[in-house]
Amino acid sequence: MKRVLTVALALAAIACCTVVWSQGRRGGERDGARPQGMGGPMMASPSMAVMPPQMGVINRLNESAPLTDDQMSKIKYAISKNRDTLRPLQQKSVEASRALRAAVLSSAYDPANVKTLAAAAEKAEADVVSASIDAWTNIRSILTADQAAKLQELMERPQPGRGQGPSGAVPGEEGRTQPPSNGSQPSAPPTVPGQ
Image (cartoon, rainbow, N blue to C red; front, side):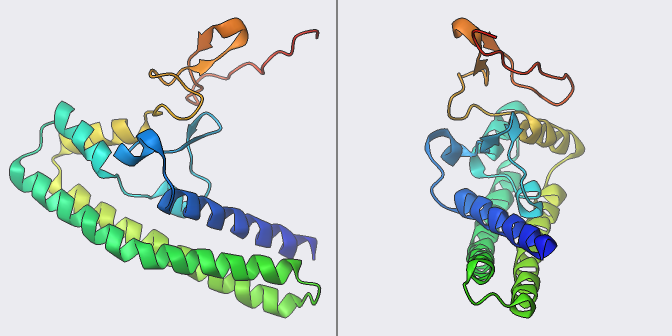
């Protein structure tokens, strides 16, 4: 039973991440910046890991590795088409995860029903991942090898988020800033005054 509850809660967290990503992006995130979490781009689920780039990222790519008018037109179409495809799939994923969570928390807990709802939530998430991969396939086929490498660099670079400065630095002790952890260097745990 603990395992079912753990899986259900993990799926509920995935649904929340999907909702945050697909709705209510604020400020700099609307121009294509990716949400930040735990020191880098948020990838709490497979659908987040394969989320196609937004136009803000493509615009930054165009500044550093110029796209032809034909490439830009094709990419805009691919992103628009993917957005139209993803929206209902993401909504279905959110609804499936909500149903799963409700079943897990229900006073009339039914393990068989929870397993059925978990399978439905996994299928809905897989559909989102599949549509995102299709979008990546389209976008990657439009780009040159150099442009694809630059896009990779842009997608992996932490973008300023809430609580970060323009450089992406996170405020440290006594107002000093320290670069955000990029995974290659271990970061020291924060110190608490008085310890």
